[in-house]
Length: 178
Image (cartoon, rainbow, N blue to C red):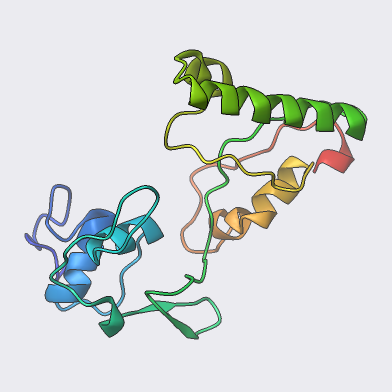
């Protein structure tokens, strides 16, 4: 809280709070480390991301590095190291045979392409996709546990940092799904 804009309050809104504020605190507020998201790093340093082109920035990304879980550093202009990846929305099926899952996956990809090309409104309500969504074959299928582990998400939510307020249980129907 010492580096907050208002140290006695230490709460939102504060110029040094949030993902962008953490970077501002690092660059001009005397901070040593910022916990943020890659997209905010790219925006802050004026780097291209998604469909956004590079832009002017007052800060030089070459003066900063990503701090990795193994204590190494990587250049901000390069591939970031990942502490955790958000397990994005996915489609789930029952234990159908792989052929049916492949047919379903192909149908979703075709519908997504059709919806994008015709700018259809139904794409967001039916497939939960929008113009910022990137489709990707994640080489599944995965169980819920594998999906969270693959993203290192389980590691983050299970770290012994604070006493948990309540237990979180995954709803599955068999041991295989765990």
